[in-house]
Image: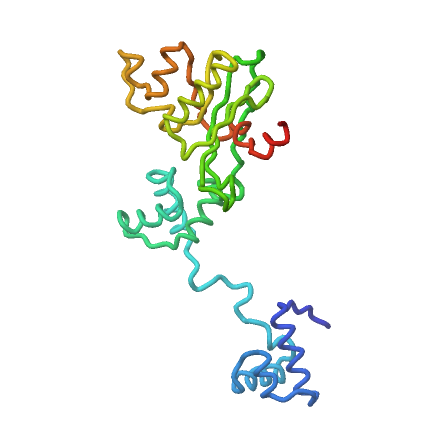
Length: 266
């Protein structure tokens, strides 16, 4: 009665070379080089093949639990501790805390697999990307103006690195004003804003990122102006609001603006 033998690709390769040795088309030295084994190891493979045939080359460990395998009781103990104390920890930090506080040693990769199987950890690949709801455009031209600065080698090697200050109407996406500056600084933003106001008039608000020019973290609940930057105070005197975007995605319209786009429109 024939018996089905399951072999790995590595074992099939060994079988082929052992059969070639017995067929005298390959020497033991050549086979040892191809298998990256010593000659004595190849001779042991030949003895196993002569004794049991192809089955003699199959690993005897197949189907058996690893000698280093942890028991189910140990696995459950570790997961219970993680659930109770470290449910919001990643596998690396949880493994460190298990050793530090509970004298339980388990590798971070083993713990990672256990936590994933138990639903206590989600790998980065499986995490859903955060979805940002697009912010609707304003209805009227000039109501909200997005401002941003982009530090770049705009003139390549013909001039120094500089910042391009950009003013874009939120309702129409029209580029309204540009100014080159040595950097994003209050002085140049004030001059650029003055030029914008002289040409287009006052908007209801400017929309910016959280650059230190536009936003400060030292605000007072009693005094509205105490949390304003110098640029913010100037807008306050003009009764113009400054709105700071919470995420880079919220301000992607101005970040897509380039000097080449401006040149193509002018």
